Image (cartoon, rainbow, N blue to C red; front, side):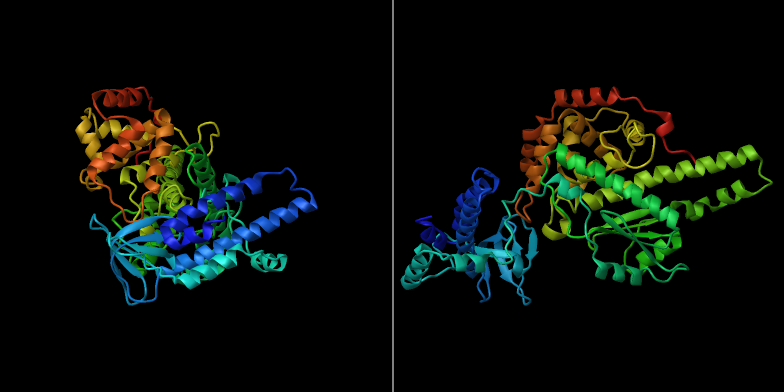
Length: 501
């Protein structure tokens, strides 16, 4: 660290790279057990961490100077607190936040507290950090003098060591999350208006505000935890950087479709016709209702209870109603819960926070992997890597022809194609399932590559094509032959298809 005081004066970019040796030392000391069990070893460890903390504090102070108080305008490279960078035309807003227009025309707005520092992009411009020779000498002498144990004790108060930006351990992700009770009280207030008083159900990773029956809420809670559990396995198998949410994920579960619609209307949410559930990026909550109480089932339920209906017909109606509800629980609730989990555990970057650029087919294809239960259990809930018979049936029915490489590439690389036609969901499922089964290493690499993009960066079609082919190979006739050969080898199980109503 002899020359470290000079290095950090060069600006945020130098700070970022200069900190890496320190992280390496901390990692070594943290994981090196030899000699650390003794009192002397603990004292050395504590003292070393204290010295590194002094250096880190000094670096942070200088780096923060770069986000100066005066109004900012011009072309800058902006260094974020999360380690990412974004560059473009910067304008400081009245509330202190920064509006950044990138070279791709994308506008990103970041809060002032999220900015670590800025460096002008003009070649002749100097960094905005200005330190006089006297201040530089004073800083150098401060860092080079002997640090007392008392100073180390003061610095370490309230400090916890964090080793690098490598995400949390999977076991941490599986551990229960705390509840944000202030948010829950708000949810209860917003759910008022129905016949039932809203109740609260806590599960390890979810908190539910519900007006449905207690039994139905408990079943939904178990279903949600199943989706969480299998998503933890997805993160581990794809070697993704896991993120632990700050609080339990928040769920609305209404008793009736009318309550569900009224809540959404009051919150200004325009739902498409026939919507049975949704996850909102804007408020980071999922919304469902008891599908057994959907009004379109009422006539069938009355006939199933009517003693004038023949017993065999009553049994058929009840079985079909239960089968329809279970299928839609999987296709709606497990699907939307998958989105909710993916955007809160690091599988994908939340779009409202950084303008995440994961292609729609990838986001939808991933969550469709959790619409079916594990075949081995024979019970409901979510699985991973199971064949989704319903999506395969839809794919074969609506895409009986073999797509050409150019058509598939347009679908994969241009988000504007999504939903321009019909039945893009089964097409997205088919591609993701193929990559999961045949190119799993490439799939993990592809998702990590997308998540590592700077905030607001929107790649061109050619750049997206290169990313995809770097992970999965060139999409040509041979690639398409392999894709269709895999799909044609799958057998649809009629018992797994949705029942007709």
